[in-house]
Amino acid sequence: MALNQQFPDARVILRPGRLVWTGTLRPTTLSRDYHVQITYKLGRFPEVAVLDALEGRHGEPLPHVYMEGNLCLHLTHEWTPAMFMAQSTLAWTSEWLFNYELWKFTGEWLGGGAWPPLTGHGPKARKSN
Image 1 (cartoon, helix red, strand yellow):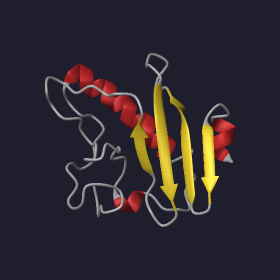
Image 2 (cartoon, helix red, strand yellow):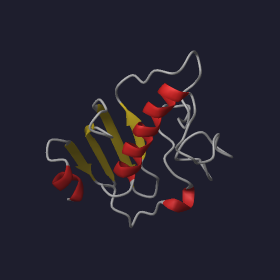
Image 3 (cartoon, rainbow, N blue to C red):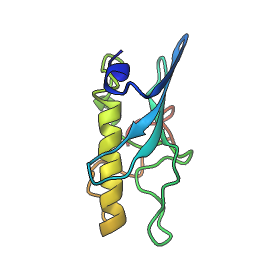
Image 4 (cartoon, rainbow, N blue to C red):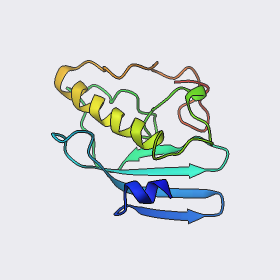
């Protein structure tokens, strides 16, 4: 419900044990719009993908992105299923997009975190990132 209240134009598909949210985020008033999809399956971390092509810097890979293209948004212990995605996952996604824009400009990832992840390559397998 919080997702619908904050983003009434977004598309939400709700099926047993699964939620898919597709909408537009603009991290700052000076930023461009990004089309984002969040897929949440019960018992897993939300998987976040930017549906627009994100450009790297001079052949550098995108930072804090798993092999399958999902964003690395948080350490394992920082998210629980009790959290509202509108206040956690979407806020972290917007913050990631802001840091992506800064990285594109400066070449330095200012978003903190640990990269690459210690184990696994995506939200289903990760122990920490």
